[in-house]
Image 1 (cartoon, rainbow, N blue to C red):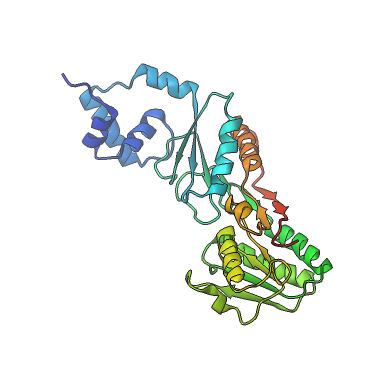
Image 2: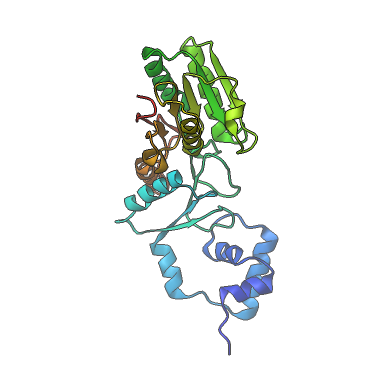
Length: 296
């Protein structure tokens, strides 16, 4: 006789495997009608979950990390989080979504997209939970003060548009930095596509802030072709501290937010949640300005 599995129960009940798992482990929210269908299927088949699996679930805490878009900065946070859990009895799974997760704790790492479903802590954007957010203004003010002291008077923000959480926050931080610096000569360029964006400049400012390192590197390469000297004629600032920011010539000044220390800090917060301790609703990280050849 074929051994009944959790997959069979899901097919009989007409639900997903994750729904059956939530019913068995009494985790997550399951609609009463779906729960009854699962329980009926279990009774009809005489299904019994593996004792080893049940003991494993009881002994090992499960943490699911959702990264909707796989990018280098997010993976640095993941690396730090996993490292912090190495000596703990915690199993970490990774995926692009939080939906249908049956883990004890769910972490979302993204400054662009939010996922629906159970989320305990978010890194990079505000959500209705414990959120680690970034003070973009602090870095822009530090850089603006530096440039003003070095005689830089005109500024431009080069953005891919105001289409997500990060670009909107950077736009607001740039305007605030201009106000606090008493700077009136500034401009904002919103790119609609990845075409020849040099045509978007009516003139070249002393400093160009870019919303990510990829755009900044493309700008550097385009300006070099035009014979523009960096940083003598224009200083370029990126965002993210991607590996490419160190390889481009001249090397790119940038700001790093997502890093291993953020991952380790998240791990300590998650342990407090697991222990039933109170955690702050909002944790603000100022980021790290990394000055390189494109600005000095």
